[in-house]
Length: 387
Ligand code: GLA
Picture 1 (cartoon, rainbow, N blue to C red):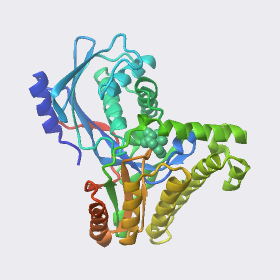
Picture 2 (cartoon, helix red, strand yellow; picture 1 turned 180 degrees about the horizontal axis):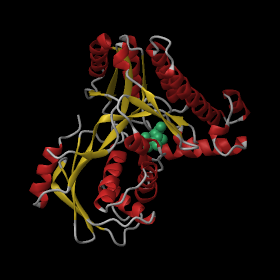
Picture 3 (cartoon, rainbow, N blue to C red; picture 1 turned 60 degrees about the vertical axis):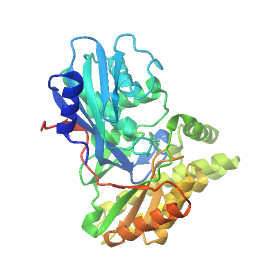
Picture 4 (cartoon, helix red, strand yellow; picture 1 turned 45 degrees about the horizontal axis):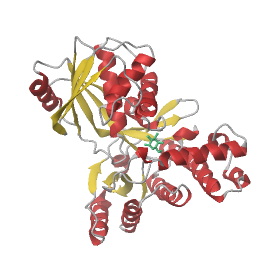
């Protein structure tokens, strides 16, 4: 569960000499409910994962950011902090550089730094490795500068780095989950007011468990489909005369859209917003075992993402069907879509058969074997004890 601070401290010593000033961690996230709702000012219900990105870091006297990573051991990347411009840095260094740029744009002066990075969030798996990298950099740079910045503001700064510096038009969900998640909880975020609430979420206590299935079809938010969905939602809202799809009061409102594609897109957003609130109500209720109903809502959300929002991909559809056929309570694709991961909910005793069924369905199609990951609602980004 997240790379060890000791190992990343070693990497720091090997690449930079000397000892790091500290080690910081930012988790990836999975989303229980509410997909493509964040940029429509709707509701999302993500949780921070136990997997994350750790950075051992130290302040530098000059104005450079120097980066190395356990995933690319032969590579040392250097970025000059003065004169940073949008699109001026490519590859993964763009994320930390973008955070330094966005911090400066928000008026925070941060120093040069050396960062040694290690990760156990698979990249391209829809688990927000990018947001984790942004958030860990934001914590490192502000703490090395001796600044204390509110976490909501830090999430907005990290998102700005991604939107404006890297050029990915994502919403606010991933950075908020990484910076505000809590162990044993899902985070309800109202993306219009930016209000948050911690919702107790402990499937194990009811004999259920979460399975995260990396379908190994890589997802890439920059390929344009994500931006296209955003544009379609904005067009639908304009045609309906509302500032965003969040302002629709019921699914009947979307019938006023004559374009069938826009109608489907809007229907997904309205129904997924409702599903978030339903799951929250279930988790907060004391009506016995709520997980079968949450599972049903997960599968319903998958159908909506597949048929109305059209962001699913073949491996996700097969994983969901195989999981449900093998006895899972429900399952759905998570994240932006077009590749990435599926989240399944199952009775603990069904976890083995569900995994086996998904693996078999992939093998039968000669697809790369899926990767099964633990999905435990975990704590948010933080400084770690060295050791
Ligand atoms: C990606 C984006 C998020 C959100 C999801 C879809 O993860 O980064 O902001 O839009 O897709 O829910």
